[in-house]
Length: 385
Image (cartoon, rainbow, N blue to C red; front, side, top):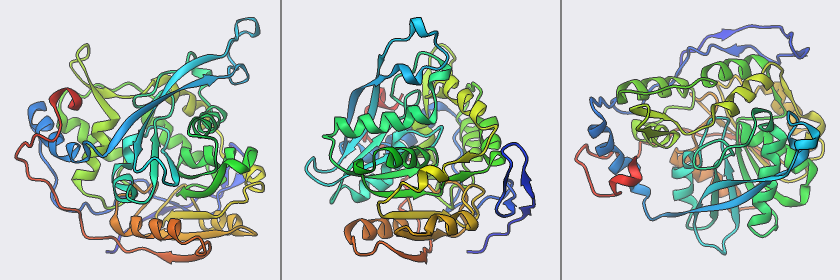
């Protein structure tokens, strides 16, 4: 499969003063879509599809929660005399045997735990996968103030989640923001992360990429019709790889919820969390100092059309590290990791510790079986709303 792409050449990142290490891919590029596009004309049709696409995972996982304690040191906008630690409920999906090796999956700035459904379903025979909602996203609670949302907060949430699960070393899959938080945690608490999978993210993310992503997210949307929602969210995720409508539908369903007040579906996130990200996105993210302290084996997944992870960044990351590198063609930022070939190599890397280095490219697997449009009783209606 060949993708026709354009590149935009920039010499400097003027905001942060660091060099953009390569031409940026044109954000108008998108991969081919597997199969035909669904056309849904009503919310009844939408729920009928959800009963199949989303309902296929019913009974495979349990929803869990723990109380995250937000410390005063991460409350920069609160007056000192008013600062108090406070609890926020954090939600996660728990897949696989409770006594299996733990793999924690954390997504990007606007992602939710159910982003990893296909990966978790395929790996749950050998591993216990904990797919987490960041505070302010999905089914997790919201923080008290916009300024409380930060990369340091997400790293602390990840640390507390590991302690909640027993405090033993775990494997972390970090996609985009999740990878940045994992790098931060592995630098501060190296004994907590045994192995690390970074999904198209490294210690350098250019400000241009971050600003463009932030500008599409930090606003409130009400989707009155399913076609509008699938079009808008699909456009924002068009660089995630050549995935099928079913896989995109699963993600867009869990990223939104029905609102009686708005008479439509809205995002499952605190818009203040994304406004905080937009504030931070005015500068490039640089974690090279933290990267020096990351000692565990790493699987680095690279979308070959990524505008987030560059070859120069990869070369610098690999110096003196145990890095295995998996390239994904026709894919930008960030891969959804629902492709069966990609999951095969992730499983191989997890199951064979001796394969800690190497470099390869992965061809796309044939599309997963598409579900018919006939409604099936996979999930009760109240779970679908």
